[in-house]
Amino acid sequence: MLKAEMALYGDTGRSLANALSISQQSFSCKLNSKNNAEFTQGEIRIIKERYSLTADKVDDIFFGKRVS
Image (cartoon, rainbow, N blue to C red; front, side, top):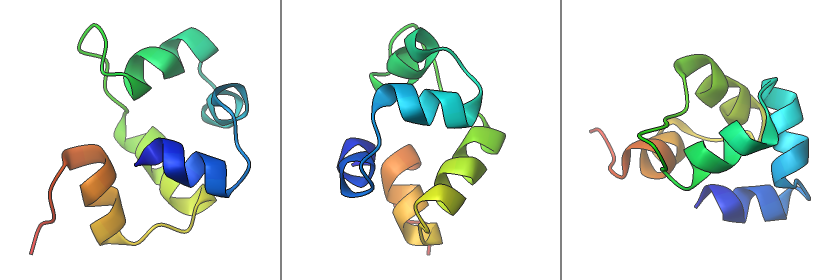
């Protein structure tokens, strides 16, 4: 789902990694859930603001569920 949001806004892994101030390799690991890598709360906040995501969309993307 994050990849779809990135495409909608014309972002690449490199551009979003730069916005998050992390390496492209770290971003790739987080995006692909490698090595138990997870986005931090701060990174999620930046992504939420960058793409104007609703709380439900954030839950869907990062936690795979909606919290009611």
